[in-house]
Image (tube, rainbow, N blue to C red; front, side, top):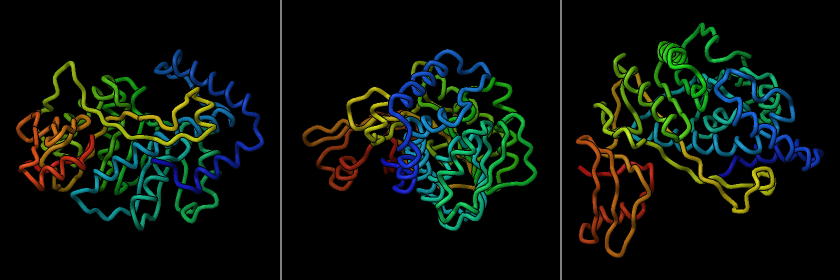
Length: 321
């Protein structure tokens, strides 16, 4: 998946006059800070060049994962979304994904702690038709003062550094201010999924309705040594490869997520939890179903189901009923 052309072009324009050596050095410094200081409440992106480098190395991945999640959120349910709250907006990846995925959005409110990220996020959007439909608030998730409700609230990669008690308080606040939908996306790691699992349990107690990825609202069947996560392939630009020290033209972004509705919702029959194993005449799928985890082999004799299995990919829903 690639960034929208206008967004990619805006980033390229902003980096055109910055020496690549300076961008590489900044990227290395950011990596060190995330490795050594992440989770300690410290500010990690504090100046304009750090925000610019962040947009090069992380915005494509966050945009791609959010776009993938939104596709599944609206797969079985239609919602009239007019107002959106983007929590931990960064440089605006979720807002770009939302504007691409949802028609007729009237207003997106972006909550972001770092002023450098807000400044860049605004600059990247300033030539877009939707620029005047996006407002920014300089705040963090713990201290935001929400005075109104929103049809869709999305928090992507925004809650993983909070303490468990702060995370629960923030998510409850978001749920209380969601008119229709709440979507949480976390890194696709065991820790990220553990946060998603706790959030899932808490919101279900508040009579929330699962939309995705789960095909049911029962207890999560994942065992302690496993975790529910998905992957999207992200195209890399030449500069992206230079800053991350990579050679291949893509990277795979792993993410975990959960989406809730305040209305009753349609659900998939099952969710594909790993890459399908495609062999001659058969496809093996690892599924989460209403009955629990299941390894299902679909053979060529099953015709239409077999065709569907061959086209399916990790993260997709699958018709098993």
